[in-house]
Image (tube, rainbow, N blue to C red; front, side, top):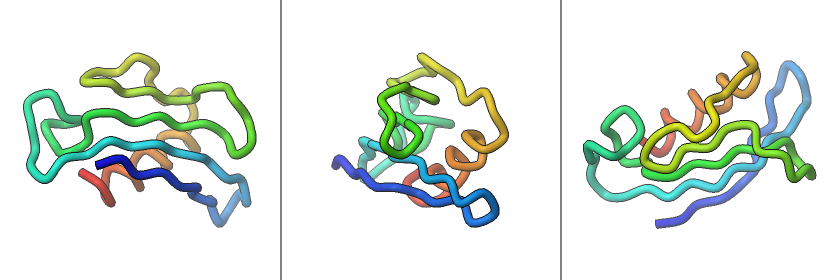
Length: 78
């Protein structure tokens, strides 16, 4: 199942758009062997990828803010 949305970090008021493909059950190919098989994160309104996971990290999150967004998404979808 595909999900998309925007997460706004309260302390920074910066938004991040995300696209996630997740399944009903975890898998060895999922993020941390969970349900997320694909995840893309971009700053709201921009086209530059900040994190990309496709059965493995293509682009790992580099900043604390993007890591926080990843953690929130993993908590929600994994």
